[in-house]
Amino acid sequence: MNDQKTWLPFFSLVSAMILWASSFIALKIAFQGYHPMIVIFGRMVVGSVCFLVFYRQLRHTEIKREDVKYLLFMAVCEPCIYFIFEAKALELTSASQAGLITAMLPLMVALGATVFLKERISRQTVVGFLIAISGACWLSLAGEKSVSAPNPLLGNFLEFLAMVAATGYTLSLKHLSARYSALFLTAVQTWVGAFFFSLFLIHPDISLPRVWYPAPALAVLYLGSFVTLGAYLFYNYGVSKIPASQASAFVNLIPVFAVILGFIILGERFVPSQYVASLVVLVGVFISQRRVQRL
Image 1 (cartoon, helix red, strand yellow):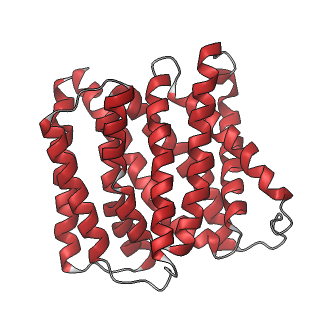
Image 2 (tube, rainbow, N blue to C red):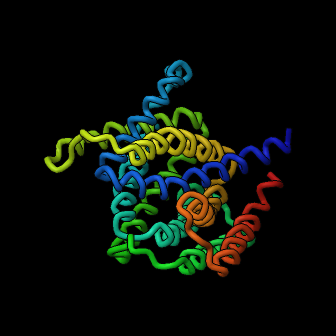
Image 3 (cartoon, rainbow, N blue to C red):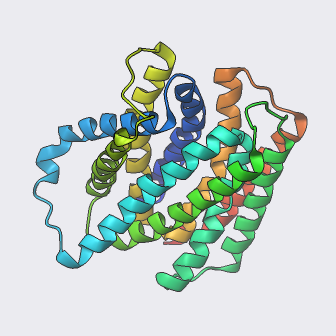
């Protein structure tokens, strides 16, 4: 039983990181056929439909009045604000450079958890964070330049703003996870996100697509089902079982998995230093997570 308590959060968080890493590739493919806001709206709609399967389990959830503001804050942070900034960021910068900024999230969450959730951070966790972030930065910088980054400076800044939103999301999620299931919290995110991004259809330059582009359309379906539903369920479960500051350390795996999936799906190649950088990230995450086994 203790082994299950140890490994289930670990497995869930690693699975979430793999799915989120694949979203960088899926978004790039989807943006080739559709407007970014249409892609995000479609992703939220697909996810919302998927959650209808769990309607019976969700309808009996009792929402406390004092938690409404936290639920709204969580959903506004992510997916609403987060996806706006990330969608624009991926238009302007490469996936590898976006991964570099993503690696900043664990320290941002750790600092926030110390201030708002009163979590204690050990020296070992800090050392692990620093090693993992160093490896993630090295991994991103070692990648070959891409022509898909027309304005990386602005794109990277927008990705940083997305990480600010992700920090608020993670902290509010940890606060709510003591009273609500991962399934319910993920459903709230998805339904609020679907409503929020439907408002963009009012814009005269954004309209529902009239042409079916197979690869981009399949990418939207994948994002809405496997990533929106699967990744958030895995992540929310993991965060509910271990401290937010430790769970967020797994985000450093995203650049590693993104490079691996880029090689498998897009035929991108590793440069020698990226193998070493990937190992550094894995070592850093392992060091920062060792305390979990003693919980």
